[in-house]
Length: 120
Image 1 (tube, rainbow, N blue to C red):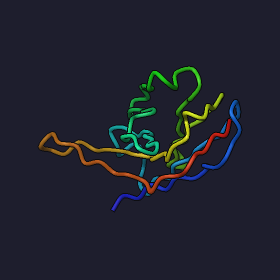
Image 2 (image 1 turned 90 degrees about the vertical axis):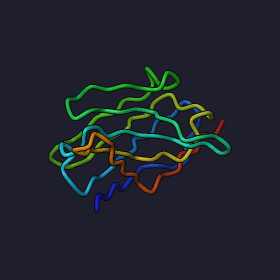
Image 3 (image 1 turned 180 degrees about the vertical axis):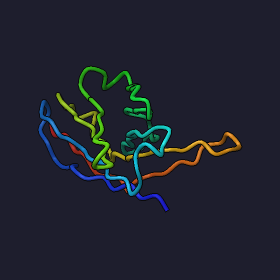
């Protein structure tokens, strides 16, 4: 069973920075992509950033220019560097990954989530 373990969340003032980490129990190259979602109170879970196994990235419009996702292949870890944080970034952040099955469907994995709170 694939395990994804996030760390690095916490409380930060607006304008500050945090770096989230996600440690995978298997090689990150075994996944078609890895990424980050977040869920704020009363809102649906939404994509924040994603990186494919080939290194292509995409970001939600609301975080472009402020957040950067990266990876350390040797450590089976992906990161989310968050700069210029805003109160609107307050949410539970989830690490996610997926594989494509032979039938073409996606097998998706989720971490347990880490809380990020940005105070104004």
